[in-house]
Image (cartoon, rainbow, N blue to C red; front, side, top):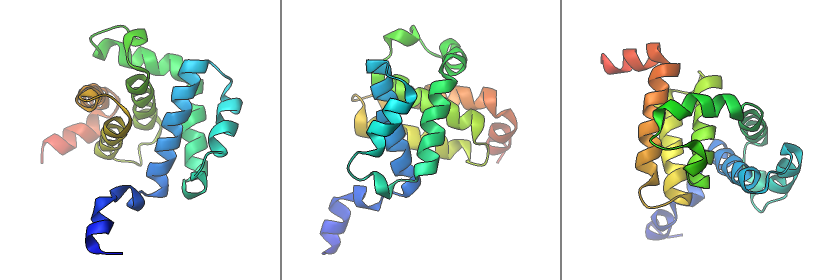
Length: 156
């Protein structure tokens, strides 16, 4: 493979954790649109092409966690958005649930990484400027959920 070809398809360099987030996003999208039980969504996504390259354990944690705590996550997002949660695009809604879940339940992952991953997912799957919206909402949410980490980062 030439260097040009390696750079032309950066998706080949996705980490298993990033792939887990992509599949979790797809699962949340399916869940939001079809209102299927989480176990059905997990089964469908696990059968998807390329799933074997994802971190399956992290995928399950993200998808099941975001679905099971979706009411609480929506309540934490609602004051930070300029519209009703139901008016969000399904991709933005799913990415915000995913990002909020990671911010709240995975303190070992730096908040900047969570936000960056959410922005990248939105760029890949969402509308033209959706990533800017997601960035702004998750930035505000990180200040609420991780004030010490955000504060230490801004003092640098």
